[in-house]
Image (cartoon, rainbow, N blue to C red; front, side):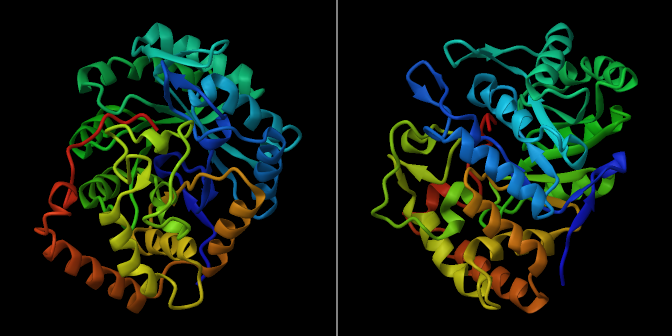
Length: 352
């Protein structure tokens, strides 16, 4: 059964059930010598990928001001020129950066910085409004988040943003945020067949929030193209694997995660889907609020992911088989190789 659209939480904004994550198209940027991007990209191919996504019915594009130190927003704005009204733009603020040097410089959670950041994003995106504006600081203490709500409400009233949300993996804080924030409409959080988050989904249900899913393909693991012998280049954030990035270690895919991919591959592809399409189908079967935003930087990636819209959620028997396989892995998690990584590592500081 095809699934094509979802409602973005309380906002009533209709979006495609699949979004396009735009982290990778920002290109290189770094914190000192540590890369935060996915390596060099072809800007022309990025523009073609965004436009092809629109052609195939994908309307939600998720970026952040810090991706490529502003470059990602510029490329997205360029790609949407002449087609802005076909798209729903989601971006984020909170991390600071130097556009000239493409360096991350820290973070700023003040209301004054929020006002500057939204104006700068509007300029780079070449648009008069942002549809979903998301706080990027996932570990920000709740009182400091609540101190931003008045400014966010003013930005809505001024027509600069339509709705707002938070990129975080802390379900308890999301509940308090939603109760205090009149136009909070979405939470962006980690969710994939490899990393379920039932507490976050329950919070989204209770507070009528959209569940925007980052990492829906395990940062590439669920495309099936990586093996234990694969290596990532050092200019790719996955190549150095900071502590908040669990899927890779030492520039290689983590073997315990590759084992889990292998275990569920059969059930995810049983009806003829590719592995990536099956992983997206699992998300739609998991909850009626999910909007996965797999990262894309080529037309071919966009076309494969968008084809999943036509296939829709996994059938109940295939979904049940995936859950059975994962239950077996969880029960076997006392193996020494898996012990530090299952069922849940410490909640990381969220940068993506």
